[in-house]
Structures are given as structure tokens and as C-alpha cells.
Image (cartoon, helix red, strand yellow):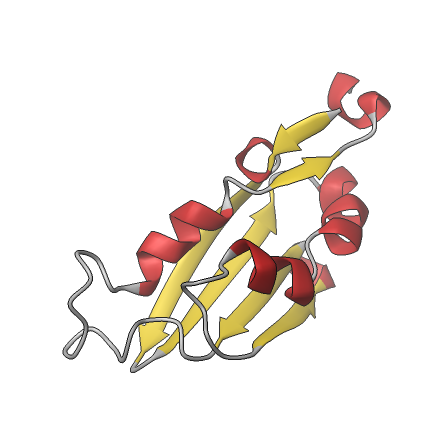
Length: 110
């Protein structure tokens, strides 16, 4: 079944200059492998196409059932230089939760 990432994960973010740091964490360990398979750095870069102009790196935190995405050139120059309404990384952490992923029915039924 296709679900939005927000159904199985939460998010947090930080920013420094033009770099956004977005973390997602699974609400339940049973979703970790699905998120690991589907939410790749390449897919996140494509999802933020037009917003993130630099590289995206994914770091796995298996002990926390979490992933960290570091996105270069993501904040239009940084919060003090950008004309965006909300140039902070926290806006991107909310937006990433709109990504869709395929979750096996049996994981959702439990």
C-alpha cells in the first residue's frame, strides 16, 4: 500500500548557512527496512528538485531507526541571504514527510 512518509516516520531538521540537515525516524522498527530501501539520497534529491541544488548525502542510524539527509545548497544562500518566505531547514523537514512509499500491507495491519 502506498502511504505518505508521515504515516510511518517523524522528522527533525537543522540548518547552517546554505546546508539543510533533515532527519527522519521510524515510529516503529518494523518500518526501518522499507524506509531504508525506498527513501534514498537520490530520491530525496529528486523530491526536492528546484529547491536543493547541491548534493544530498544519506546517513543511516540503525540503532535509532533513523536516517539523516544532509542537503547542500538547499536554503537559497542561507536564512540571512534568502528571499524565501521560510528559508529554514525545518520547512524541508515537514515537506519530506509528504514523500510516498510502498509499505507491505502486513506491516500496516500489525
